[in-house]
Image (cartoon, rainbow, N blue to C red; front, side):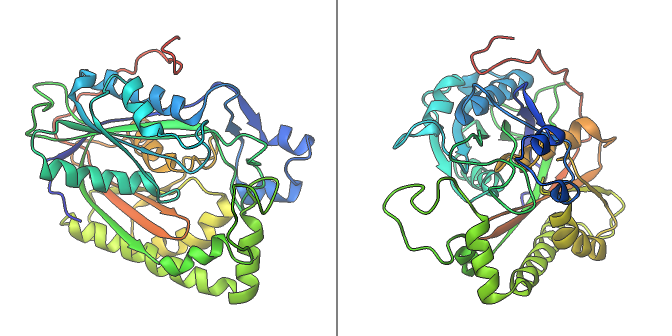
Length: 368
């Protein structure tokens, strides 16, 4: 999907809880096998002892609005994403996020597409902004707390550890009523975003299990390994690997093409990889990307682990804060969501950009 250069990511933020669990502590506690340490490639995971996923999303959203220097009333759309329990049953976390960031009248809804939901929310928000010129800005958030007993952040899935965080991005049109104005600048122009879906792979997440009447009926905690193992025994690993490789290649090629660029364009400096374990990245992503792109592949997840829907937006924040991108430079962000959809976004640093100093770290209640 081609957006041109007037669709702007005003700013993007990540919010992490202060507590952490190191790999060494996880091994000592018997939560992680020693032989799995190198396959994960992690130093530790952020762990929320207090804040829920929606509360961390609110913290990130407030930070984004503050960085932008906007009023919360400028936000006309709130799209919240998550993959795990949000703290209440039969409840709407998107409306909580909208109200708590100060935009209670914004259209609010959730986007559920596995760990790829934030990318899909960016795409949907772009369509809203095209269709509704008076909308103002869209706030996209993610928030998850992978706490026991429902999750085991070290072993609920193969090849990754789950970290707690909230993320947020503000999306707007450069000619909207919340235009940047002189001297303020945007983090990125969102040039394109391509997606590819292979819905037949939904079977991976439930293979061998009947449909149940209530959550956690199949196991005491969410164990994604069991159905995946059952699926691989029935269909083989090569089927998924082949589909994943083809889909990853396609979203990269399509996104670069839609952005009006060549794959070897020297302005493309980096591609940010999802925050999966080292083994998964080396097996599924790196061989394809090395064949397609000359850009440097970046891994930002060693100290955060997989953030669920948060990977995509956290990677945009780290590209801004941890790389030497200059005005005119281009970067790609790639992600995937189980059962399965892949996405790739192409962003460019606008020619007019003044970095903003982040405010003091705040908790979800606004206290330092």
